[in-house]
Image 1 (cartoon, helix red, strand yellow):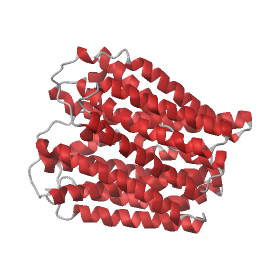
Image 2 (cartoon, rainbow, N blue to C red):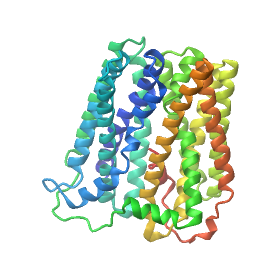
Image 3 (cartoon, rainbow, N blue to C red):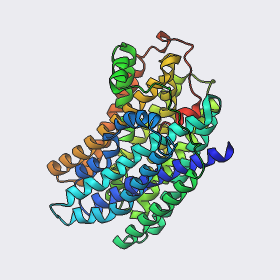
Image 4 (cartoon, rainbow, N blue to C red):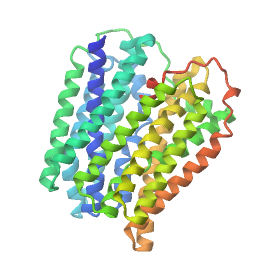
Length: 430
């Protein structure tokens, strides 16, 4: 079982690796060096979340339609290939888009769409495979291994890319993306070798539809309030993904190498936060832990805002560290709270609803962030002002979310709900 956990972790790392160059390097290059609209970049980077509802259909279809006796492997492989293809061609697509070719937008949507489709196709399949292989008793250990391998993989990938693009040139960027894509493909293939046992039986588990997830949440006032809270919270915390690196370049003149390393700094403090959350589980209430994480993320945004005002790179790094730490604590604690707000027979339904909420939050935060940045920049004529307004709005959303959490009555739900471990919850962050 140890080997299978490691193989599942390799697949998780492989898919996550393809996310790093697009969301921590290419977004900065497109906005800063290529002067592409932040709105366009936000829409392209959000395609995976726009396609998130397809995960419900993919999961249901793979349950009942094995290929050569394998229910998950073919879908994981296809998704991995699409992810690798998307990340390898994305730099050239970005340069084509920047050249003003009228067909560049269509190619960009196809390339980024391929990556988005692959992300959704592979992630739902390997998480289902992890559950198939591990069973209920071993699921926590499996997810813990997968998630920690993924975070470490993201950190290493970000550091490696930052070195490969120093100094930045189009050729260096394309070479870095090709190397990341190649390594991701090899790791994914190694993970798939003899991982899934062949079967001809279809799963009897129930796959929830979007309508079922929506009706369950909307029919309960507390659940509805909680998911509105989560939507605002995550739109604020995760919506800065495409803007943090370009802001570093604009405000402090950071190189591509330096802005790419922002991801590794953020990831390191998320990892530290998860370890701390695990140590504190059972010793502090989940509501208190969630509010502490929310406050930490809020403080991170305020410090980042201050860094732009006084042009201090040290203060900026401090803000990124606080944002990463707060994000880790907040997300894990809020996921645990979510499981307190359900009953054992509906845990699967709420996992699906959480996935939809997460995708909606990222989609909303990214697109609104890009649009607001562009609008404020055009009106004010000041590039830095656009970023500052976005970060200010995200800080305001966090304040609203903090106030909303005080109105959520966890005690109104069944106290005997089956809650996952802190590490299982952490695995759903990605």
